[in-house]
Length: 154
Image (spheres, rainbow, N blue to C red):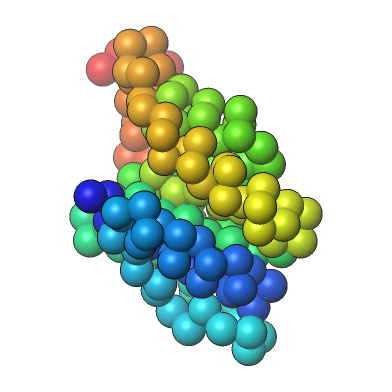
């Protein structure tokens, strides 16, 4: 059972609640973080809550939904250890996991619609990190997080 932290700003709140229900029915352990209601709120707060839950190990993965997904990804990626990816279809969702080992999925409520979001979340959760040459690149991302030049020998 995968623990998944979810949150959204006011533009993605309805989709986040629907995805949480769907994930629970599929046997996952979703947790809505933050208000996730239709009241105006600032996406950096929601992104921080989910990103810290994933980085601290309280959740295995995270899903963030706002108008475009972009603001959520920018904010979440400021937390060390987070690899948040904005995706718009099932292929980019799959690749964000298999190649980039994304641990947070960022989605656009305004552009995708709930049916597409459901397919994207399913594709993302079904994908597994391939490792190999991709692990080398993830290691370089970790070097950047530590303030190191990723070209320097390990």
